[in-house]
Amino acid sequence: MKTRTKFIFVTGGVVSSLGKGIATASIGRLLIARNYRVTCMKLDPYINVDPGTMSPFQHGEVYVTDDGAETDLDLGHYERFIHTNMGRRNNATTGQIYYSVITRERRGDYLGKTVQVIPHITDEIKRRILAVAEGDEKFDVVLVEVGGTVGDIESQPFLEAIRQFGLERAPEDVLYIHLTLVPFIKSSGEIKTKPTQHSVMKLREIGLQPDVLLCRTENSLSKEARDKIALFCSLRSEMVINARDVESIYEVPLLYEEDGLGDKICSRLGLKAKEPDLGGWINFVRKVKEPSAYVRIAICGKYTNLHDSYKSIVEAFVHAGVENDAKVELKWLFADSMNGDNIDQHLRDVSGLLIPGGFGERGIEGKIAAIRYARENDMPFFGICLGLQCAVIEFVRHVCGMAEANSTEFNPSTADPVIDLMETQVDVTQKGGTMRLGQYRCVIKPDTFLHAAYKTGAVSERHRHRYEFNNSYRDRIEEKGMVISGINPETNLVEAIELPDHLWFVGVQFHPELKSRALNAHPLFRDFVRASLSYKNPRKQSEGEEFDEDR
Image (cartoon, rainbow, N blue to C red; front, side, top):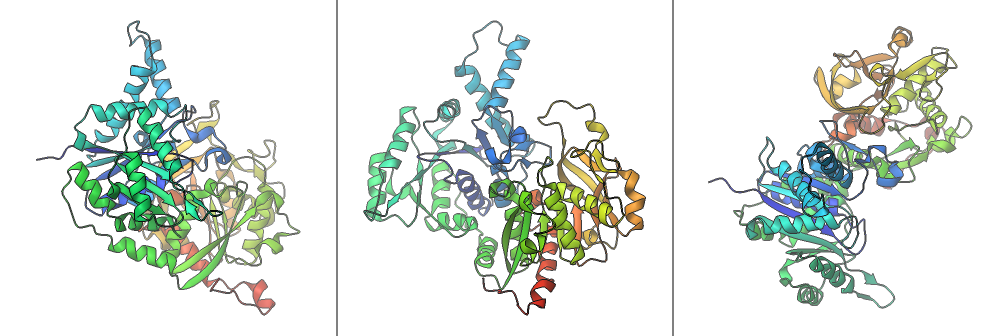
């Protein structure tokens, strides 16, 4: 007999940034470890249709799925933890919900009725939740994270929708989990449960009673604290789960498992109890915390003041570090402050350089100066999207002798537009969701760094860009030694470049960080870290100084 799909709703209270995305992904990992088919969904309260038009400073990185959706960064956590690909259905925003309802109203679908938040908006939210469960791939459990915090005006339609959703299904098919803060007041030396009590009170005011509380704390909760929270929040003490701070986000599933959360969820949802297989995850976490080697790599970008702008890159380095049995320390460099005069000062203590994706002219010359330093000092280099474009500009300027070479994104009248707007983008005027987005094929040239990493002749990777390498300059860069190592066969678009005489120098137009997984590091990040570990920094050697691998 087929088990009905179960739904778990994760909400948050007291303050934002408690880690609902990590909590949701961690619960997914516990269920995956019990051999259940799991997917996740994020409900975002903002009115933007998607985060694609937002600055990374507003909402962190834009995560792109195989099918070309621009989504919330929490979908990256889901994919990295449960190794299940997400898509358009897995992220819904207030903007998308209202856009759908208003479009139907304009079409006359409501037959003259007054369109209201209840039932029309809440019905659309419920429809989208069900669409995730009723897609081509069948899931045993759908985890739904509700963005924002309880009490926010923006979140109310979503909370009302999930309240209705629970009433319309059997009690054993729906579970509500609430993540909340139990602060420790250092001056008095005690924890305070009142914020959690008030957070649950706000939930109950709208008709939602949590079945499980995840309590974020600096230290483990005592039995007395658990009992007090359970009493005032109307649930059993064993359903108050310790969610104490940990060194690595990848420890969170193991922390929950210590408290029996996986078995408690299965029991509450009527799922058959299965012995979890967490051996691989435990080994992964051990390697994260106990590496044998150390390497420092610089990330030079324009959004480095907010590390969440590059969240997937950060996590891809964790995964790659594990596969190399090494800790990767990231040195964040603000591209705006870098130039040819101070570049040595910024890069003399690192063993690799990564230039990430981005948009706009600001910081470009700093990135180009950093790339030149890496190329001339044989330092391992990895360019992603804009990073590839900057690497080409640097090479054409300083190796091919075209000093004014540039991208038309930064200088529309440049004499040598080595990077130019894609032909398919020329007539595009709208900003949202109109770039080259999602998964495209890349045919790989043999005997290249790319082929050595992937060990195959073709791959598919995710993209997000409007500008591309100008094929008119292809012969000139190849004559000077730059290799085109990846091509999209349908468009002849350059997907990857490299310098074969270099220790490791690769630029890719796609975003490999989006396909790195906790237990399966992306091969390009793996090989980049490996090359960086082997790099002997000539600046440090000339000073008679070695890197401290125990840092």
